Image (cartoon, rainbow, N blue to C red; front, side, top):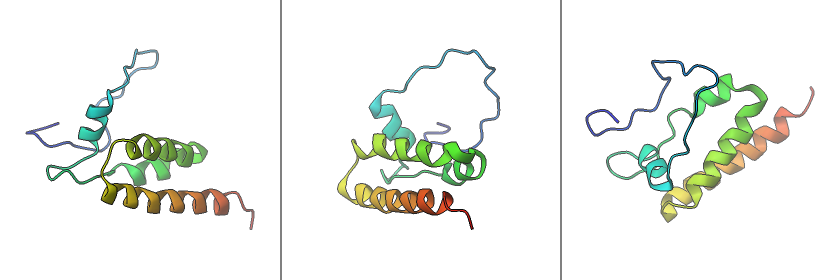
Length: 97
């Protein structure tokens, strides 16, 4: 957070390999993924899809699953649309043309 606002993007520092990590508690995960109005935001989505390769879709699916447990109905509906798009990407991405 910077000036009370959550910033989602590429970190300025790279975390060296072998560092300990701590899982954020559910309330902090929700704070990270909402704007000042409380609306869901996932600004890093395109970066994951572009750079995480075959790991991208399962990673986004897990993020969606965790977020779905602790958000309002409107945002759940938005995440359901994203889940359907990810399922389509998984299906089409596995096809060889």
